Picture 1: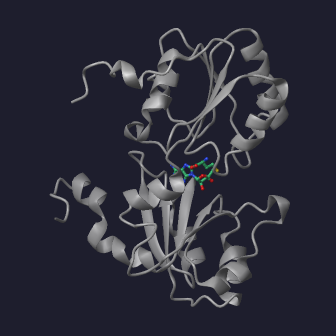
Picture 2 (picture 1 turned 180 degrees about the vertical axis):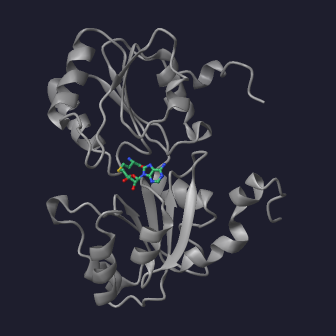
Length: 267
Ligand code: SAH
């Protein structure tokens, strides 16, 4: 068990007047990086997203102020410009500002835009990568992102159609498996386009919801039936959707299900 403080060689001081743009990982606090944890312990102000859960925020120093800057499809959300101005303002006031985002800040998280604004404003910042939900979600569902028997490449794509969205037919034509973020609403369109692009209706699909939290759930289906199955499932976003042959490895690799049922994982 980790009860001793971190060795000095791993300690990174958080300078007043600077911003750490950090990933909190997908939900399980065990998937925080040591740097994100140090950010939580040292920050004066933590500006966080809806996707950052309470179990992670509970690790903040008692004196830290928490500010919610939620952005989540369909709900009232803070404007991106307001968030970046707020980060700049807090840093200029001399605070240690932790901008904490779900997963990895540079993977579909607008972290790049926020970092650009900080750079333009001359605010010192550090990027703390996090474990992205697109890799951790499948892993917690027993689905490897790559496996020598199934795929030599994988595409991480957004299902959000801002800026037009990806060219699904072209992606389908490559045959490379897909890991989709923010694809819940557009799944009917995406599935249809992938089939038009040549993917078989039998292509395995997994939908992993609230990945790595206590509420994680997984639906395994196929490209041909995923829309109806998802609707009938009663599941809710956020979800990572995996389209590809590696989903077939799950029955043997579903270690989490085994642990929940109190069994020894497959050995
Ligand atoms: N930067 C984040 C992604 C932000 S985009 C990351 O690296 O994980 C928001 C999308 O991420 C959601 O729509 C969903 O597709 C996915 N997501 C984030 N956390 C998730 C979780 N715990 N379980 C399932 N999907 C998640």
